[in-house]
Amino acid sequence: MAIEKQRIDTRLIHAGEPENRICGAVSLPVFQSSTFEYAGQTSYDDLKYIRMNNTPNHDVLHRKLAALENAEAALVTASGMAAISTTLLALFSPGDHILVQDCLYGGTQDFIVSDFVPLGFQFDFIDADDPASWEAKLKSNTRGVYVETISNPLLRVADLKSLADFAGANDLISMIDNTFATPVNFRPAEWGFDISLHSCTKYLNGHSDIVAGAVIGKQDLLKKITHKLIHLGGSLDPHACFLLHRGIKTLAVRIRHQNRSALTIAEHLWNHEATQTVNYPGLPDHPDQDRAKGMLEGFGGMVSFELKGGLTAAERFMQRVTIPIVAPSLGGVETLVTRPATTSHAGMSPAERQAAGITDSLIRLSVGIEDTQDLIDDFDQALNG
Ligand code: PLP
Image 1 (cartoon, rainbow, N blue to C red):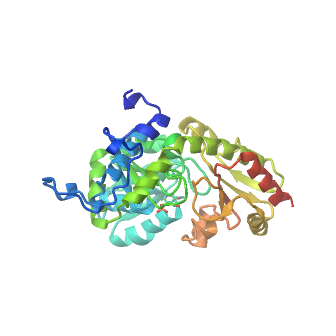
Image 2 (cartoon, helix red, strand yellow):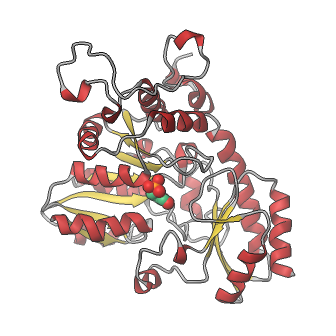
């Protein structure tokens, strides 16, 4: 069956695999060779060498990731931050100005403020939920716009369709961090985005055992980003490629379980007398619920909430839960719980966190694939006891 007709579950397993199985191996072996015999290549980028991102382990991932998001091309990188920083440095020149969403992952925001700007780039924050305000932020040197599909940790879903249209109308390169949604719940290229970015450390790999990233999107832009990555050196090691390849195959099974489980848990917490607020795009009182329903195929595995007892109650809850692991990061098979103020958003100043609505007592859950009722029972004993 032609790949274009296959659904994502089939593509996850078969897209991009080598046509001829190597020695009949069902799983692609790890090509742990830094260099390969010279075969007459005429350009530097085509030499077969791990840093050029072109071993068989890289190639299969590039083809598979592009197929998963219905995009033209893809590139894997040494981390999500390598994907993000290399993309920004490859696509823009000092003096260029970009628009960025005002509630980004803390590491991305810190990179833009502390590294990108001192190199001579300019940026302005936008409220990605307010299309009427974007035009006024445009400058003669504005070249790009950067958003996230589902914001971390408040789980807002911006007006992404209007944003991609606005970028197209104003000749801006549109970039979106699709880590939280994954290609199962949202495929940026289908909505008009030029570039989709991932921390594959999270859902794409799904097993909390590697750090990796990906850039997926237009062929001409990927060519520039690949060339920059070759110079900056943020390539993914073939063994990590192998683990990522293995993890990706179960993405749809994991994500559909996590979508269902997180919704059930969010509803339970929402009805619990100990909670003050629960943030989850699938809840009826979420400000973006209608938009999320129209754009996402699932609301994802992340939930954040505040307890009535504030910071003391949050710390008590985190000490009392027995199934979730108190740890930063997200997207693995095990449920993780964290306070973003001390982990993902610790790089922001208290004033920046306050402006973004991230309180010290906010708890963030990354729902794993454990039994949903076991998690709910564990949360209840932690809240009620
Ligand atoms: N993007 C998002 C939304 C993230 O949550 C993270 C990490 O938490 C990153 C990017 C950075 O990814 P990595 O840690 O793989 O560099």
